[in-house]
Amino acid sequence: MISLVRRTTALCLLGAALTACGTTGTEVAPRPAPSAPAPSPSASRTPTPTLAPGPAGLTPVFEHGPRTGGTKGGKLVALTFDADMTADQGPRAASGERFDNPGLISALRELKVPATVFMTGRWAEEYPDEARSIGRDPRFEIANHSYSHYAYTDDCYGLPTVSADRMRSDLERAYTAFEKAGVPHPMPYFRFPGGCYDKAALEELSATGVTAVQWDVVSGDAFATDADAVTRQVLDGVRPGSVVVMHCTRSAAPVTEEVVRAVVPQLRRQGYRFAKVSELIGAANGHA
Image (cartoon, rainbow, N blue to C red; front, side, top):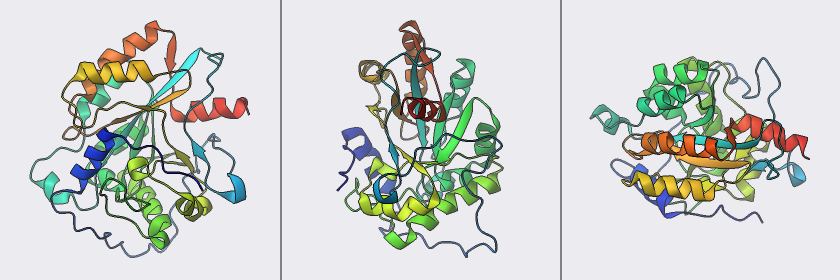
């Protein structure tokens, strides 16, 4: 049995906040099925690195790249950002709450840092112009964080849950939202809401062909107000091949831009080179 990913206080707070204010505790009703199937997430102009299926064909899970530090181009680290928005948070956005973070994206561009954004379909619907801008920027890649940000297991930080027979459609609905927003080539990578998964979830998603992407460094940026503390946590945790999880939501992670501006130059001085998740997976395949 695959155990649940370790849970952190920061993500617990994030999950609780995301389910507050208007959450009913039941899954949002899906839209009518489109007349044509959603485009395959792996469809792109060039081959995209993915992991081979796990035992018995289970969805593979990626947590970090090679630890050797001998990867071509130096030590690699991937900064990843979860663009979270649950299916039922429209009223909060309408009242002025900001689930985006344009300043963070501008900082990444200014610092010339490639990054992977794990985006919910609901976020793409709320901010289609931003989703399209990120998706068309070759410095970034957009990956799937579900449509609803509802959990794929029970007991996941208080998040409402998606039933097993709706998991695949929830994931595919996010890709449909990306297509409608004008995102040209979303990646065949999936991050479970809250990072929570089990064998049953891996079985349900196996037919989609995605690689599940977790992390090995928790930034602690969720609802943090002390940017220096978050910066120290990231710097203390990073090793060659690390995947760092952060957030791209102003209301839930207000100091992330400041953290990025502090972390990037320090890691570069330590000999790290920033990479997208696809590059780390490609490097891992090369070390298989």
